[in-house]
Length: 524
Image (cartoon, rainbow, N blue to C red; front, side, top):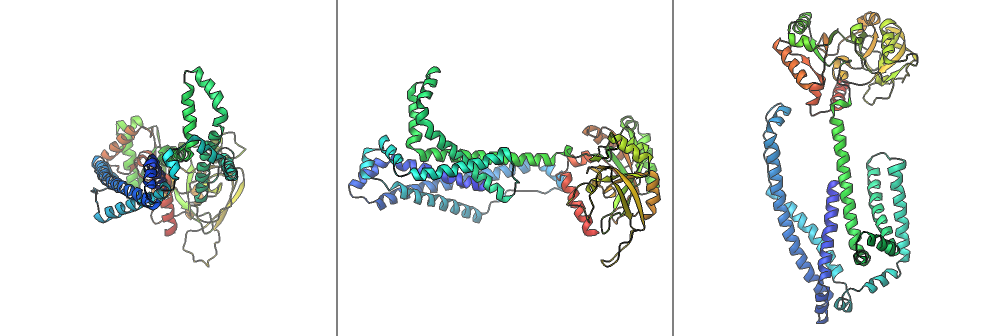
């Protein structure tokens, strides 16, 4: 889109410059016509001069473009070589490369583009009256042309401009359209027409507003002659005025488009747009055996710096439980006092029976009949696998429990057990699903989670037995990095801070989640 706008702007600007050059030589061309030159001779003279100008412009632009591109590549990959190597995981030297064939093709395309504009402009410049060219432009002549047989055309233009302006006003202030391909073209078109229509209204009203404007400007010390000249030029050269307005409209449209895209990119890359904790805990260390678990707990208790900054910890060993026919398994997480202590996990939806999120969590902690489900039970998730009957907080739901085994498409899905729960609420999507072990985290009473553990299983990629979650000020980057170093010194290399990891990652959390989810579906 930006390239198209740049090409159109260049075309308008180049044409207007050539037209102004031709109009400045009208008297000379009129003299040549009187001594026997034809319109073709005039057009040929102007075409040769314009093509020579185009040749110089294309050559200069190509040289500057090569030098600028070469310099930018050297600057970027020279100044940020270390950062790029760290992000890529290995040094990847990148050097500027200039292909003579591509340079020649670009130069030829640019020259051809400018030459075509020159040919069409020469045709316009050569069409003039000899008497008018010798006499020079007169204000009365332009006014008579404006009053001629153009009223019907002006009426049509007025109706088109009014319709486009109304449509764009509706898009901007009444009903914002969906930003798909067709709507973007319609929005851009109505914007350009609306800009020209507003200018048309202003130019049409200049004569009637001349006297009031003169009185107003006289109060602030501006002579009436300035206003007369300002009104006279756009009235006599309406084509140039509309061309300049169109150029400004294109530029502003491009700037707005780039700003919107940049805001979208920055918002998408903002790590704070999603919760970067695991159920309120800022970091975790995974273990595969009981011995590794003991080493993590010993390291946390042994190091004074770690003990000083930790505000709590929780050991959790989730397992996957299939509760949807032909669907993906979900992680079962027992609700314990350690999980809820000084920990306010926000709920996406809450049962009307509870006055706060804390009350809903307390209900799951104390009553086996309550359950907190993942977000895709409440809203349609395009990444979820299988058909899910959407629920509301407070509903009573019977969840089937399926055994983990291989099945063909013809095998019937018979639940090994069914459990009835009351939905206390739903948890939003946060940093936890980035770990396979916490996909679709479903929170149950501790006793119920232990009863259903025999039906649980691990996916092929899940090698960890459990996790030790740690609570600290995870948004303090220096503290998070220091904790990573202290755990590493103690021999714990699995300590991870999602906020720190996702902040330095070039992939957003949503992109990582989508890629991982797609991989799991393929494996499943």
